[in-house]
Image (cartoon, rainbow, N blue to C red; front, top):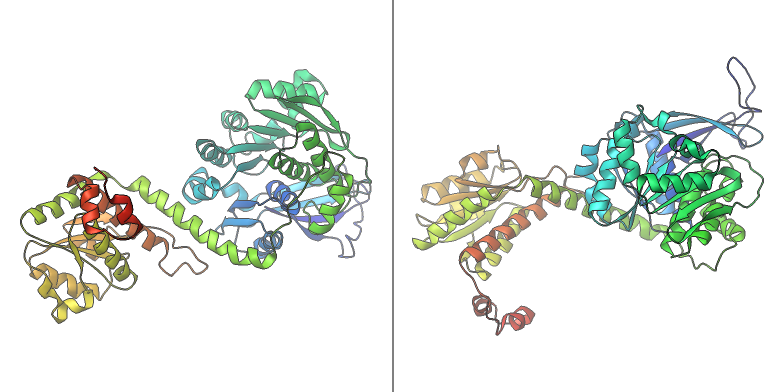
Length: 526
């Protein structure tokens, strides 16, 4: 995800040379365009109707806002951490023949870590049908983490080897990690210059390069781009060179990115490899006909690609209406946050705390004690659900109104009962008098909280961790992920109690004889 600052120059300069810059499309000596290896190819895929999304790191700066606005305009979903030092930038000098020189300042992209990919973006990755990443600016360890998550989930992987290994190592990581990244690709797309350095014995033959790289790294397919000449493909059902369409080049920046966008669309629609190469070549050709690598006019880009494409008929889906995208994106982002936070919580949870909670509740029940569930605010609603769930699965439980406890509600508690108190912060002021009254009545306290160091946790006999770092939503304030965590932790506890007590389908039916669940539980032996 890069802001490309494009300059027009009469020629690409050698050292110690000077030239006067020309105006860029009437914008003066420099104009900002949307760019970046991954964002570019996702943009071209989106222009051709593919649903796309991007994750990673930006800064909360003007450049980041510029890129996010472009993503929104084209319907590219995004899950972005905005804590980078600066959004990535490239200074691009384009000469009159369309050749260019690029100077990159990776900024936030270079600050992306493997740990952040695993903890913040794993759920987003798992929603994909295919994951793409690059060897260009992203640290190799971060790229490898994304690839490993995708492969573990059975998701196809694509790696764009945009720079030669001599630039990737040590700039982006070490040689062993680069090797692992390339081996993790189901589809590897190197530029010819990069491929030549990886397999120098193949000379200048791009098809020999593709064949050799596929054998070396065990990829399902390798596609080597050869600029205006076309592409070489080595795949199980096809090996050959697909020539490009001849067009007048204005700016060659991002041609390989656009190529990959077209290739992804072709693979999604099940085109054969030769036809896929033709669609990819058409995208690359359309890209070089204008300044900038991103399809800022997607309707025109789409029409021109179909005009140049000379393969089998292709029925492309239209991109979703912008209004629908704007409404759906925050909803999906919130789900992604909740899923990611729950995954982190699950990795942190251990069975010991659940075992202690089960033992406390079963011991209380054996002695004639009962279970009560309480909370303030949103946890009050969670408490009502949890009491109902426990009761329906063999652990009689009642809801306890926390603010009524000190107004007579404590009378429903007797010594030996267990009270489950829910509070994300564990510091809710209104809950303290209730907890103190509960203790005076001789009940045990089981805390479900996001803060194991909180006042509530210190007051409790048993603590169940339901902590999340993010809630989701634009403000990140309203309880969303924390409520999901509390609900699922209590649901997990009910499941453990159900099994510990030998609760059967017949037992469930006795408590729930009506409705669809009553029908499903009737007559079962377990």
